[in-house]
Amino acid sequence: MEGACPNFSLMTTETFDTIIIGGGLSGLYCAHLLAAANRSFMVLEARERLGGRILSPEHQGFHTDLGPSWYWPAIQPRMVRLIQTLGLRGYPQFETGLGRFQSFTGDVRTVQGYATQPASWRLCGGMHALVESLGKTIPGNAIRLNHPVCEIEKHPSGAQVSVGDLEAEPRPRFHARHVILALPPRLAAATILFTPELSHHLTQAMLKIGTWMAGQAKFYAVYESPFWRQAGLSGQAFSERGPLGEIHDGSSPESNPCGLTGFVGIPAVQRSRKEQLTKAILQQLALLFGDPASRPAAFFYQDWATERFTATPYDQPPMHQHPHYRPPADKAAIWDGTVLFAGTETASEQGGYLEGALVTAEQAIERLQA
Image 1 (cartoon, rainbow, N blue to C red):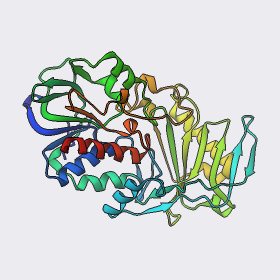
Image 2 (cartoon, helix red, strand yellow):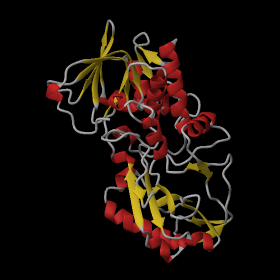
Image 3 (cartoon, rainbow, N blue to C red):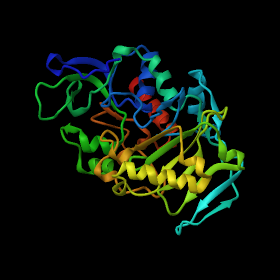
Image 4 (cartoon, rainbow, N blue to C red):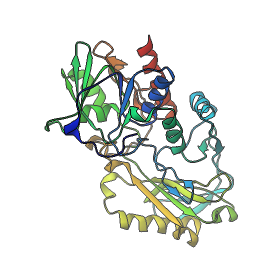
């Protein structure tokens, strides 16, 4: 795997059967399937790491989740199958005990806890374990980090993909018979030049598909003991006041290390002062769960709205409900099948979830092999 910043001036056009743009779950699963079929491919990832919106900072061997946190075994067979195939292990979300609710005025009361239906599960090692395990099934020389794609140009024999600054020369270029767009359609439409340009209808359809979690911010507070459980609380809390809107127990299955995690409930435009926001979050946690909550052993925070390889200016307003995802303009591919859509926002089944990322990856690879 190439993690260092490349010397673009030394690069020439490289040719592959398939180029996968994006090293999140969908892109990595595409690569995993192509590697198993012994196909020629290259993954181009803009970031210096793999995983996309899967991000699991580590504290003393415990991996937190600042991106996707759950999967649902009862309704997500692909996730279950992949976890088993990779030799990983999941565990049910802890939900035993009472919950806490904070009204708009700031008043806090204890409420009846509830169990999510269907049951939500977490992954041992965090969702990063999926990324790490999939990465081991992909040849190291088939992944290029720090390779943001700036242009895709249609050629008679496929497509040429350019990396780097659109205005800079020389740029590394890659040629392939097929290109898989394993990134959010809105991000692709906003950051990649398509030559010839896409139709106005398709471009607008891509821009209208909101990127899941792109406007969200999450926190993870790690503690030495689950003191809230000892007080009969589940770790669940909801607030109309903020700054946190939703909180859950984020502990390991052995409950040590343990943690509280959840979502910031204020819009992206109000989250610019990280230090003040962190202080307000810890004060709110103390109000909900007691003074020990204000003194975590480690605290992690991720604002996805500030990530240029996740969010665009269109993603700053918060989503108030889960979108109904589907392929943009009902197109699974463009340019006579040269460029194929993948990524969870293009899934008509389980869109926005990790399962949706696997669905679209399987569909893209099936079209390549048809």
